[in-house]
Length: 183
Image 1 (cartoon, helix red, strand yellow):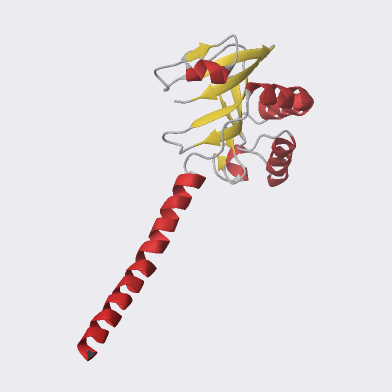
Image 2 (cartoon, rainbow, N blue to C red; image 1 turned 180 degrees about the horizontal axis):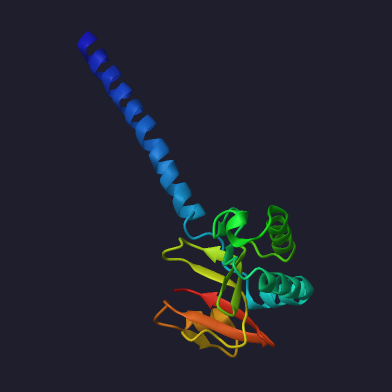
C-alpha cells in the first residue's frame, strides 16, 4: 500500500514537472504564431498612404530639399545613419535630429535612403530585412530600372503576382511614387 502511494506521488510529481516545462514552451509557441513577430502588421493600404502623402506633402518636399543639401547622407533611420556618425556625412547632430523629427511628423517610421537621384521614404516594413517587404514613397524623376510600374492599387497587383520578389511602383504626382518593395 505504501509503495502504491509512492508510485502515485511520483507520477503526480512527474506530470507536474512536465507541465512546468511544456506549458511555458507551448504558450510561447502560441504567442509567436498569433503575434507573428517576424511578419508584423499589414502594410497600410494605398488609400491610407495617399491620404498621408497629401497631408504631409509640404513636409516631404522640405525633406527632399534638405536631403539634396546633404548628399553624403545616404541612409537615416530612427536609430542609425549611413555613413555612421554625424561627422562622417558632414551633417550636424542637430540636423540629424531635425531629419528625425520631420520624418516622425510625416509618418515616415523607418527614415529614408538616398542613392543616386532617388530618395526612398520608408513608411512601413514587414518581416525581416532579408525576406520582408516595405511600403513607402519615392521621390525620383522615373521609376527604378527594375520596377514594375502599376497603374492601380499596389496591394491588388502584388496579390495577383506569382513571383513576389518584385518592386512595384505607382506614380502619384510629379516625381513622386508610391512603392511596395518585396525584393
